[in-house]
Image (cartoon, rainbow, N blue to C red; front, side, top):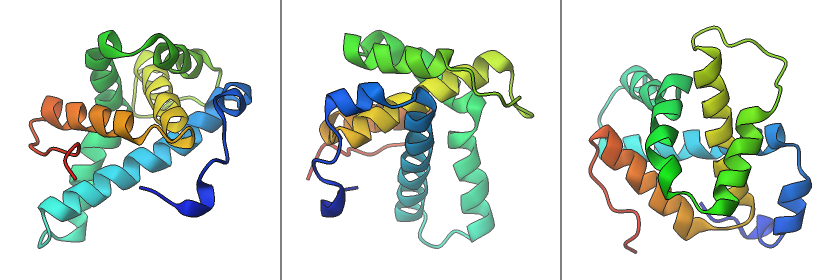
Length: 145
């Protein structure tokens, strides 16, 4: 996703100064839009309800925590820093459909996605999204094109 109006709006320094929950807020939206767009592209005739159910299987806290567990060893120091900031942030909300540890890991995952998005690290985002699709059994290559 590339919007010119957002180009060069955030530096790495800006990203470091943002509350990690703000990064997670952005990352949550970006990740969900990616998953929805991917699923529609692969399932153009699927009913909206089925698309929604399939989307939930990717975006729920449990799934995100499982994805980040598999990805954490591949993160750079910088990426790990943003993941841990998000994971350790105190959100003040109690998850209703997830364990607290899963919820925190998912928040860290979303903070990482938010950081990569606002700092325009699109190739890295594509790499991570490709890995998530592989882990989930989906087949695609986002690095091409």
